[in-house]
Image 1 (tube, one colour):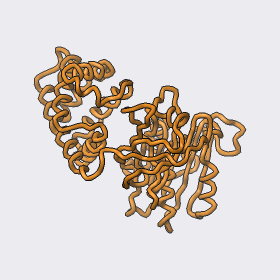
Image 2: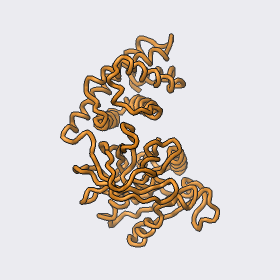
Image 3: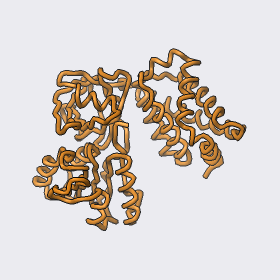
Length: 370
């Protein structure tokens, strides 16, 4: 561990337990010192606060891995173009961040900690600005028309939209979405299909209890409406050089990127077996199982196993999907793709570690509105 990384991680422990208050203080200072920045942010700031801290923690945790650090921050800078962030805004953000860290670090906050965060933030800002500049040939966001909207259950919808300008992405990536019902409030959803010639993109959305955007997308958006899409992000994409067979583990609407990867495989795969495990609470949440089964019937290299955790009458597997995957192992020589709620992803990663699946062969996406 480098000295910079050590100082960053040590200092973060001083404020970690107060991170919600730290985030509130950070935004208050930033808006007080720079009132013009308030218009760049949504009215509802609860999720935005947690996302700031998530970005900080991720950057801190990857500072010793230059390649991951650079890729993450450049993607973040590219994504922030949708907020109309300009290079001069980074100084305002940095100043508010340092004030917040000093305030909540208290008497234990040292000169060394302060300099470490200044140095780290300078790198973060430079790489994010570079990522935004490298993407300057693309629009900051894409306008897209909703073509189809289908309710699959009480709280799940599948919608298809088509950007008015070409939007390039890879199967497995996710895209920020904003709709007119919640302006300036963006949430990420994985594209549920591989890129198509007509440019259309499918999204699988579950309306969560506190999900402002997800509820609007499921219950209020209609065909003909316009939505806005941010730049594609995420690295849960197919390694086309690998010859290993594949295991895909999906929970709920985490099926979306898995389905996109399967669709990509249908266009070129001839040698790799693909095993899909699709889990949900009950059969109603297995909203796209019929389509998966049709794909499995058409492509001999694809197999599908569905499971429910709270539906004893379901005519398939029962239990957590991570436990079902373990029952079908071993999987030591396979590539893994895992997508679902954060809890489902953590459970599956623990199971795969117990099964001694090498971490380098696992790509995952903690999918969800929040």
